[in-house]
Structures are given as structure tokens and as C-alpha cells.
Image 1 (spheres, helix red, strand yellow):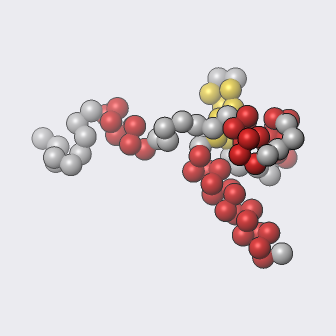
Image 2: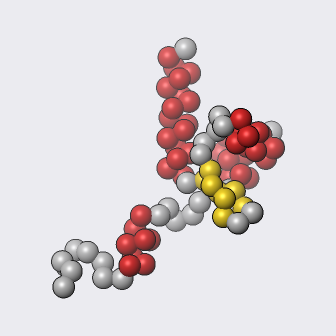
Length: 80
């Protein structure tokens, strides 16, 4: 029998470890006031933007990865 504080349903464990919603390229355009979605795709091609992943043909970003990337960029700019 699992301890009382551990969920018994594996889906509950999965839900606890995933964000409520993954971000789309359009979300990044809005968040960072980018000129277009093409900027996000250029970042991806050049490997200079936040790490994303594909779900079928759709590109998605983990909000935590975007926050970590933003913090890294801010630190680099502050150091310069």
C-alpha cells in the first residue's frame, strides 16, 4: 500500500510534474514583444532561443525552460 501522501493514480503523478499549459511560438511573441513568429523559428534554427520540443507538427515550450532561458539572458546582459 502506498504512503498516504503519494497519489495512487499514475495520472496524478504525471499532472503534478507538468505545467498547466505549454507555450506556443505565438505566446513567446506576446511575452517578449517579438516582431513575428518567424523570430522564434530563427532562434530555434540558430539554437539561441529557449529549448522547445515538437508535439507532432506543433512546436511547444515548457514555461520553466523559457523562464530559465530568460534568466540566463538577463544575467548575460547584466554581466556585459
